Length: 263
Ligand SMILES: NC(=O)c1ccc[n+]([C@@H]2O[C@H](COP(=O)([O-])OP(=O)(O)OC[C@H]3O[C@@H](n4cnc5c(N)ncnc54)[C@H](O)[C@@H]3O)[C@@H](O)[C@H]2O)c1
Image (cartoon, rainbow, N blue to C red; front, side):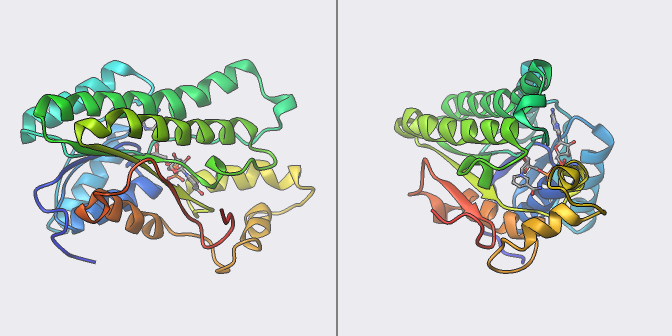
């Protein structure tokens, strides 16, 4: 898809070194946005920016670990000084933990909250301060999940973080509306990415199954549309949320999952 719906928009996508974040960055650039790719792995986000430029799009990469406040501040400051503004923050970075609650350590619990919840809080609030400084309004788009709407077996810490992202999305939407800032979340289902390779490896024995792909297949059977999700499916929703077409939407955590969770 190539339109100019996001022409002149400067957009940061955290966790865009691979998988869903990469798909989002490529789609936003194809719609005319200037995209700042970012991940804690400089080589990966650099590669995605190069890929976008090779296809004729506009992109730079600025590495950042979302769990570090100074990294996010630097990401937003550098973006604003290079392009004169920031229009949209896509807070996509996240990690999974496939482990029963009874086996999860406090350190594991804290680490996943640091990346998924603190990381989203930092990206959102630091971007919002920039929008307020510019006096332009802006859009914050967080990465939730079907796990923001329902608890899943084997993913208690992960689901807790994604419920927290949905709560933050709703509260921030109310707080920032008077400043012309909307806050929404996209909530994917089972996307065939590196993250799901890990979940599959750890979840398969937990479900009493065996063989690579067994847990993925068990989840696939719950999808009304019958297939696993691609990053492109998620990117289409994010491009809409980043566009003017979504100006009257705020505080929502919108599911794109092929029909697993229906609320
Ligand atoms: N894969 C799925 O089925 C699925 C479903 C729903 C939601 N999600 C969410 O989508 C987002 C992306 O998931 P994915 O499947 O693409 O995962 P992935 O592991 O394949 O990619 C995650 C990206 O985030 C980056 N990242 C990880 N920790 C980071 C940190 N501390 N700071 C900066 N970047 C960091 C990684 O380097 C990588 O580029 C996550 O928030 C995830 O929870 C994924």
